[in-house]
Length: 146
Image: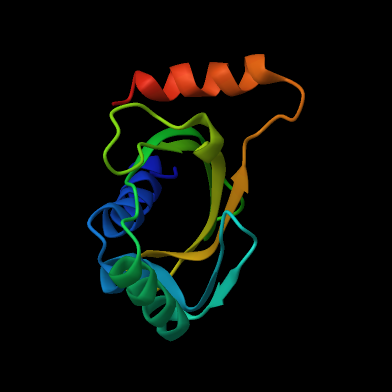
């Protein structure tokens, strides 16, 4: 039987790394060769590159924290899992989620000898072009997580 709580905890540690603006903590949740595809399509490959790029981002920009809601965790075999979540952000100086920052996050997690690690993080904007009702639906769902 698979334990979804381990995958949920792994994801939360990654999110905490971002929200605490700690590049080492965030990158540490990935495999050595793990990859992260950002909201803007940028690619970070490997922990070292993640630490370097995230450190620069955190030092140069007031990054907003994520508000998350896990939608699904499913296992593919004994040592691979997929987690899908919706995320939003409250920009610095504001109190409400900015719907333009809503996204889907998907991680592919792999079982390492002692723990689960992220092999891939994919951030995809949830803009639903021409369907503002769907943007509002996600925003309202995320508000309940704040």
